[in-house]
Amino acid sequence: MKFTLHLSPLNGGPFHCLPARSVELEPERIAISGDDCDLGLPGIDRAGKLSVIGNEFGALGAVVARCEQDAFDELCDKGLAGGLACDEPENEEEDEDITRLGNAGEPHDLTNAWIQQVELNPAQDIVLIVALAEAIGANATLLSEVR
Image (cartoon, rainbow, N blue to C red; front, side, top):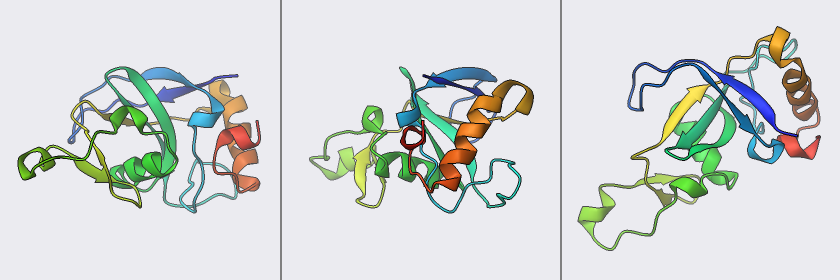
């Protein structure tokens, strides 16, 4: 079962300007681990937000993080950043075009990357909100661990 995530508009910053829209993701592509969850749920008050990251081909995954850099690092660490991964640069000139992500500092090309925060509306997202709450309560790392 895929979940629909409603994205807020992004109109500035280092990434592409994107309109508000919806994307669908499988539970195994939604990472909710860590102490950063702040989804507006009762009893959960932490600093992170749920964001979707993708490239020109679509959404790669959703992660909870405090900032854009942490979100990209978390996506990499959870193994969801395959669409952004690139080969190790052969020279210093190629190294300028890559960004090292995750705990291992793996090379990634963010040229066509985008990131948008998810807007959770209880009226339309109750199934997703319940799934997220269950996953957070179970200390799961991916939504698929409880769904």
